[in-house]
Image 1 (tube, rainbow, N blue to C red):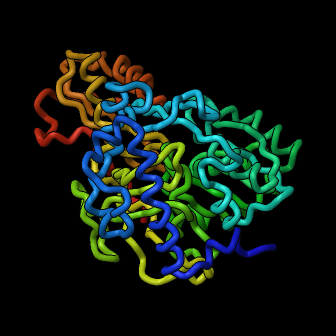
Image 2 (cartoon, rainbow, N blue to C red):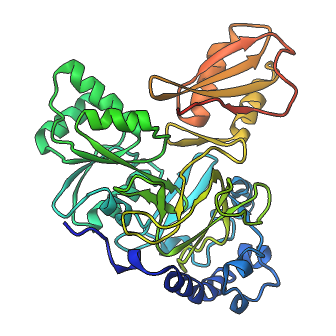
Image 3 (tube, rainbow, N blue to C red):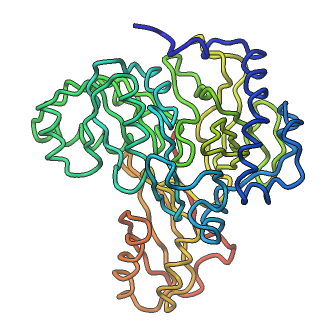
Length: 408
């Protein structure tokens, strides 16, 4: 088994930085051909952006601002230099945020992370991320197939049919959220179904605490995690060293002070900002709203790229629930649809290794709960509880999403 995906993973820090920043000016020139970037980056000299210090002086582009930008200039907010018809697939994610998929065998840079998790040519992979409108399923699908794997495009849900597919095709690997893998394993144990063929997994889209990783290991599944987004694909991935996540090749990751574009010292927690070297769909300093920190030194696995601690919370109120982002704008829309409700606060907790949403709503009538629950599901595409509380009882602090999950 080849340990590394390619020689890029073991380059020296100096060699990698020289390569990235030699290519960056050309990417900036491509980005400036898009009207949105031409406005956002007005006045910069692309040829002068050849170091991290120079890059840090460019303005950040906030992911939380993308829905408004795109609404004003459909479909991509003027941030893509090529027409939509030049891409392979076109998606939408909650927000809504519209995303194109570049052409090519591995447009989301997923193969490297799958390889680190032990996926190899000839493996059969059960892919349980959604293929419907959102890019999640295709991110994993394209990466696995570029490695030479066969992919079962199972999507999420319909557990009984998933068991039939697993028992027929005997996949050795799983990709999807950790929560759904637990659902499959628990259900199979209760129903006497045979999932023993699944020996490894790459999970993403939800928190993956050590307790759940250890539970999977006890059940015979070696599971690794990836930090990926619907806009960027794979940002960083876990390796057999189990010490942080290694940043992907061909991207530049910065950790900045939340609310600014200023890099923080190594080890300090800050917001993740990513620049990609894809001229077809460039991202220049996209601030993701996620918190993380750079880990010192190189990974014991031999890969030499920067390591980050993984997801450490949100720098803004948008949060990820069961692999899908829930945003303050969605909670505000619930209020607009139900003006009879007062303040709203969505509380996200974790029960039985699964994410749970509870919408606390100020109202005089308990009968409003069912309508609010239906609207919450319509907007977020996920079910949640609704608790009616007395008017004036929720704090007047501007917080509409409270992430109260603890991962131990």
